Image 1 (spheres, one colour):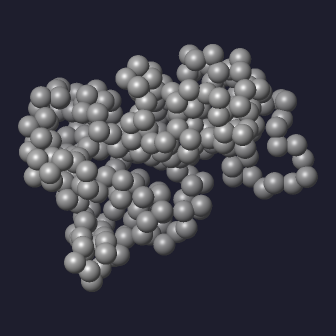
Image 2: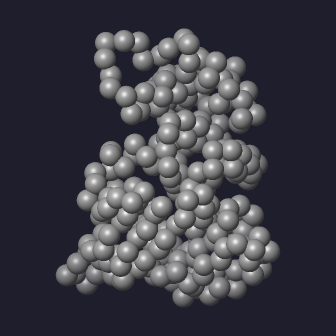
Image 3: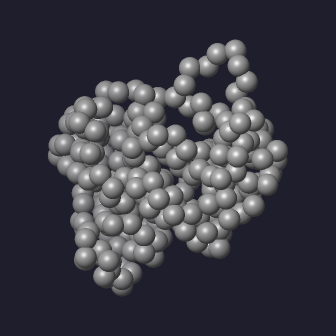
Length: 257
């Protein structure tokens, strides 16, 4: 479904700060896998997601998605099949638009725009049904500006927006990192529900080891552009935080984190 093959990625080439982050890196993700990705700062987690989404390009190697080589495909074309939720709640929604307008804009993501109304009254009930899965009462606040929502509510809306069109891959880039503990727990439960119901192939970067252990079907730990831990199947189901904490602390100390 998704494979990165012999990826090379170097930053600040030819300077004293040259950093060869990925060197002959390969990764395969099967349909329906939910991969939780952890690692210390600078391990390559976000760079990995950026290369998949197209905001960054590998220096060499290939990225194959649904049987097609997308290594050189522009980001906006990849976005037709890839949904992404970023760390900052402000990034996934437009503050000056209402909840209804945000959803309508996302609903028309892959369609041609003409001289017709972007907000369709006939779609409101559908939007309400989507929002009901959040259990936040957002379905009764369609006319409220997205900018007036709390961080947790806004991230929940961003998640709905990212998954309301026909995508094949969901990217979660530390999507709970900016939230308080209670909101983080709520958003992770919404995430579980959405991913399970729609059977999305999902990559989730997180600094929360408990989330990495409790959610998903596979755990990947990165360090300096290498996979130092890759656990899936029954081993993942049995995993406890203590099982990965030692290795995580070891690489964090090595990186001075």
